Image 1 (cartoon, rainbow, N blue to C red):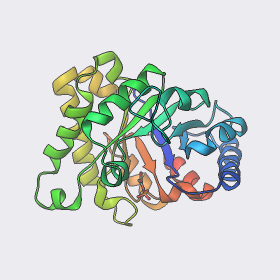
Image 2: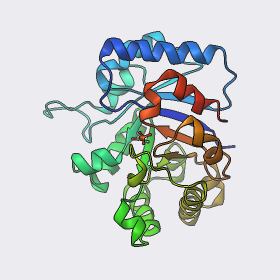
Image 3: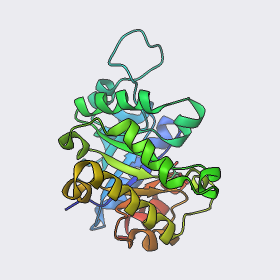
Length: 251
Ligand code: PEP
């Protein structure tokens, strides 16, 4: 059975002290809750080791928001997958639309990042999603299919099964505009059938596919009730422990 997951993406928010406080708040809140999903927070590189020291790994997973496309060496300012893993983190967000859009990440670089992350035992949370123009001109299914094929389809079935996918329509990220339950379900079903076409139904049924894009306590229940939606990748609402917990408890 595939897992339900709610993962926070803090992006470039919080100082180290604020981040430790927020992680503590989420960790404390989880003690009183029988969560029906795995809960993860993906935090800035600078926070990873300190946050790892204050959370209960049985209740709260930790992830980075990116990693380098090289293993080590003269890449000033980059942070490698082994460095991320050495902090205690277990997850890494890869291919977020902000990285594709502002930092020129391509399927080629992402392919490398995924392999390096998997080699360190990290679980990639791999983001895919169309921009508004592609939603409006009707090419969105093809765009998302190509993103998956180009970056992930040279993986073995065993490695592919270690990945979590996050469908994040770019027009819904940080805009307050959420995909409707139906739009999200249709895309998630399309993603699962794309995977089934390559790796078979059994593998496709095992992959957790999260929805991301202005997910909030008020709309999470409807989204998570869809048969192919296995949780959420949460941006803005993950920066407040109460609203994040409102999404966690939507399961
Ligand atoms: C995200 O950036 O991954 C995201 C889903 O952001 P938000 O929830 O703020 O739309």
